[in-house]
Length: 79
View 1: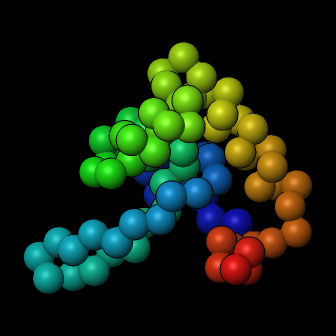
View 2 (view 1 turned 135 degrees about the vertical axis):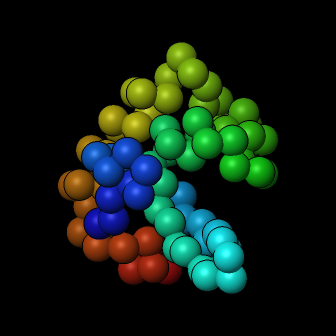
């Protein structure tokens, strides 16, 4: 299970790669940090899933609970 690289407390569920000064950085963000980051392309996903500022904390808690009670260690193991 990967922890969010931003808040360092929630389970990471959104994975990105950014390139800065020619160096590649892989990051994992929790749903709340991803929501608050404004990453391109995610706003429509959140809107379609009904995720907004009124329920993001509850959804983050639910994902933390689900991920901590599951058998897999990384997103790749689901595939």
